[in-house]
Length: 158
Image (tube, rainbow, N blue to C red; front, side, top):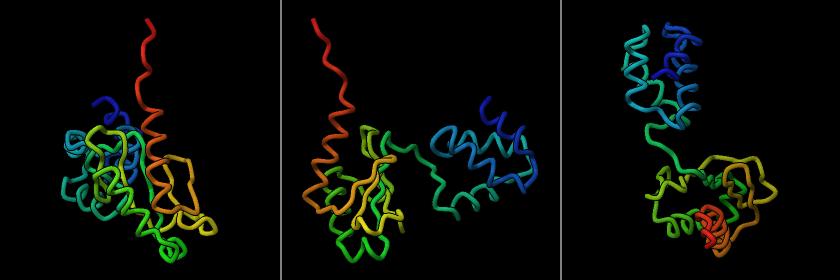
């Protein structure tokens, strides 16, 4: 809990520090571990009720670890009109996950988002910071398989 102790020390122990503490914990761990949240309540004047209220109000906060690669599928107006529903459904079928779920191997987390700001490329998907545009459902398997291939352990040479 030394990371969390440093965060609390830096951000403060008052209720007004709640959002900043949660943001920094999520950056440090990739999600909000229960033990980290309990530690915050023990070391600050922030109640578990307040932490939970803030963390569930903002969609950005997570209570579960995310995959190595976060796939964000855009569902803004331009993407919606151009078939985002179909491309997202194809990703769900390929990975066997629903929105905001992580694959059992921990490689991918799927997130539908309101807008990625790439409307001229609709429909759009991002994997990490890589942007893929003008997508059709048939494109999804190729893109995802490329990421899977990149993440396979290298074969050892004799």
